[in-house]
Image (cartoon, rainbow over all chains, first blue to last red; front, side):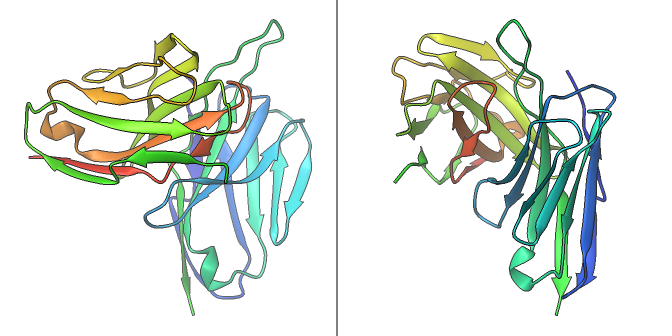
Length: 115
Length: 112
């Protein structure tokens, strides 16, 4: 199946700094999703992207669907302690005739914030 | 409240003792899926179901079974658990396969 390369694996930053992470693939996706997982909980959807080139914001989070459809980026501005967690990208391929492959997940980016 | 529930949340068992992890969603979603999460490997899909009575293998189906007799429930069955199935398991659901998935809270399984 498809594979997603998510980087960085982990980030140690100071509170207030901006954060950038990305996912790349050799395959084309037509939906990109970004999830956040906090300790002891399941992943929660942050942002969904449906069109190449799309730039979508959710509060301090901004995500972009790369124009090649093979990558996506997530930025967090002015990080705060509650941003700590694991961030996952996920790609989805839907076919014009109906149906789709399941979600393919990146391996996650661990975000650790030092006060 | 719209949600995906899993039970149990934590389970310690021994090799070979059959177990079932239940998953239920109240959103009338057609698509349901099971994942396992392991350090350094991210989320890997075990099985998925497009609708009632329709199930299919994901990336890591060996040692697992599922059933989808009703739309809301999608239990994960381990007929003969082994230590390499020690993991954190997540159930997820979505309107259809092409939509964003909602995850349950997870089940931490330890097989001794």
